[in-house]
Amino acid sequence: MNKKIKVERVQTGVRIEKRMLKVLKAMAEYHDISLGDLLEGIVLHAFEGKSPFNEQAIQRIAQLKQIYGMDYDAGAAHNLTEEE
Image 1 (cartoon, helix red, strand yellow):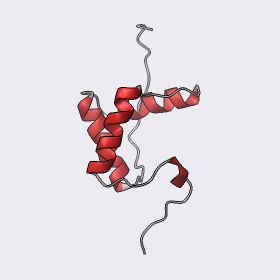
Image 2 (cartoon, one colour):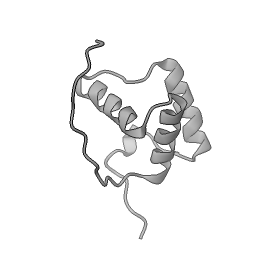
Image 3 (tube, one colour):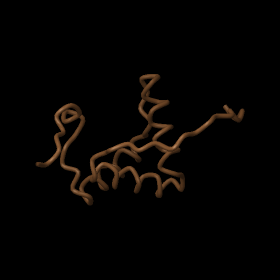
Image 4 (tube, one colour):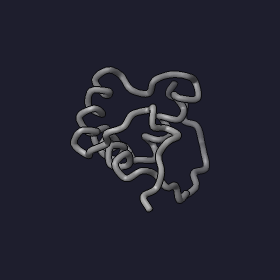
């Protein structure tokens, strides 16, 4: 699909776990796209039940998770809490 779709983007203040953000920023940098573009792509794929990443990207993510100490997986999705 090469057809350009006009959208209106808004600035948002989303809180996200620090190590996860580092991995996301590194993936965006690796693909030479903005963090917002990466997140939009992930969400669009997820909304269709598709994986946004191929096997090579998943391996890179695993490396970045190790580098940035992101020592949890999808099982932690609803169990992340703030430090007191």
